[in-house]
Every structure is written in C-alpha cells, then in structure tokens.
Length: 303
Image (cartoon, rainbow, N blue to C red; front, side, top):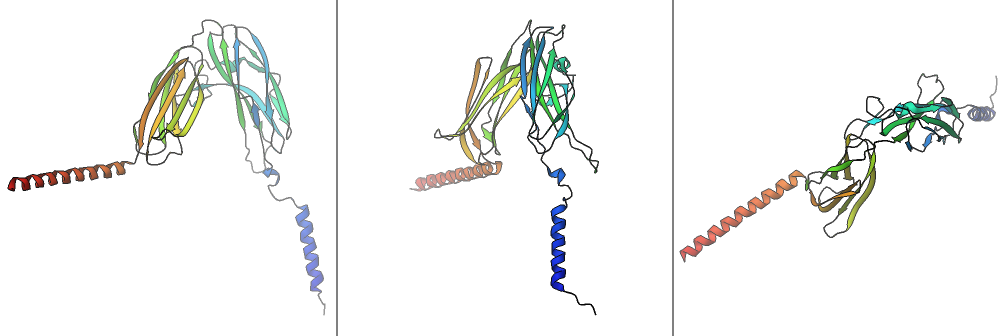
C-alpha cells in the first residue's frame, strides 16, 4: 500500500500555485494600460494677406502608459444651428482654412510620456476672400489590430481661425436677453442671443448672477463666446444647483463689440402644483372673507 504524505503534497501544490501566479500574465492586462492623448494648443488665430505663407506647430502629449501611432490631417469646421453644434463639412461657408494646411508627414509615433511637436504650414490662397476662414487640424490615434477585432480611436482637434485682410467687416449685436419671471422647475435658467452680421468672427462676453432677496450672491459665472460670421448664437445660462423653490434676483448681461446689454429680474421657482394649491387657498380664503362680511352686515341690519 502506498502511503501519501499529505503535508508534502499540500506544500507542493501551494508552491506550484505561487509559481503560476507569479509567471502568468492575466488575460487583458496589456489592454488595461491607460492610453492618454492631449493636444496643445486647442486653437490658433492668424491674420494674413492673400498668398501669405505661415509656419507654425502644435504638440501631442502622450500622457498615458502605452505607445501609439497617430495621423494628422485637416478638416472643415463650422456650426449647424443657434446652439453652435459643430460640423466638419465644407458645406458651411468660410470653412475652407483646412485646405491651406500642409504637413511634412501624416503618420507619427508617440512613446508613453513623450511630447511630439508637429510642424505645419498654412499657404493662404491667392483668391481668399476678406474676412474669417475656419478649419481644424486633427490628430487621430491608429491602434494596433486586436485579436478581438475591436479597435478604439481617439481624435483631438486644434481649430484654425484665419482672418484674411481686405474689406473685413466686424458687425453684430445682442438680439435678445431672456429671463422668465416664473420657472416651474429647477434649475434656474436665462438666455441670450447674439448675432454676427459681418464677415469675421468676434468674441462676446457674458455675466450671469443670481442673488437672494437680501442681496447675497448665490451663484455667478462669466464667459467669453466666439460668434462666427453670418450666424446667431444662443447662450444658455444655468444655475445647476438651484433649489426647487425660492425667490431670487437674476442679473444677466452680454457685451458685444463694446456695447453692453443688461437685464435684471426677480424669478420665482415653484412647481405648478404648489402655485395651484396656493391659488386654491387664496380663493377659499377670499370666499370665507366675503361670507364673514355678509354675515356681519346681516347682523348689523337686525340691530
């Protein structure tokens, strides 16, 4: 009969497990390495004459834990609506600046923690019309093929703002500043509309401030907004942490090409059911007051 030394057997199994755990790479561990990509700057602004040549550069920072290849290329840049959702189609007027961008090479490589400088040249068309022209330079990762067949791409862009000299018209105004005095649901909101009737972009500024009835500031924000030519932009102001009920004083202002437009208003935030309940209470109170008055008059007549 074979005698088994269970202590030695368990010790051997434990040693084998430690060896396997120490030498085996878990499935997907390589895929868990964090990928990172940052572009700097996120925009460039230029003033040029037709036919000019501009040389410049931007940087791609690989702030992740793994290397990757990436490509650079130009694309149109414009907006689709008053909310300024971006679109990368040449159907938008003046979205042709990407055609002027040229690169020494399209394919690049970035090691982990490496910063890569990408030089480029803008060759302004001889026939470029005066005013603003817009485009975007993209950097897009090119991941290695995966056994699963699934690949992920990351794309970041640097917007080009090019103003071509000539008959440049900078024109625009604020066309609306709206604060609704009654708002049934939070958050508290206001809005502004700004129009650009010129042929070049400009920057407008805004301030949105909410105070309580005693003058204490509850929320304040200020911003700068690019307005593209031949467009109207709606700017939404929101106090995200506003309570569901309250009375506040709201101040909103926009400054467009040196002209300041201001509006102040008191705003009530209250759900419809609360106002309905208050209205019913007031109505009942009014009816009871009329009845008491009539009863008092009848008693007076008796005496």
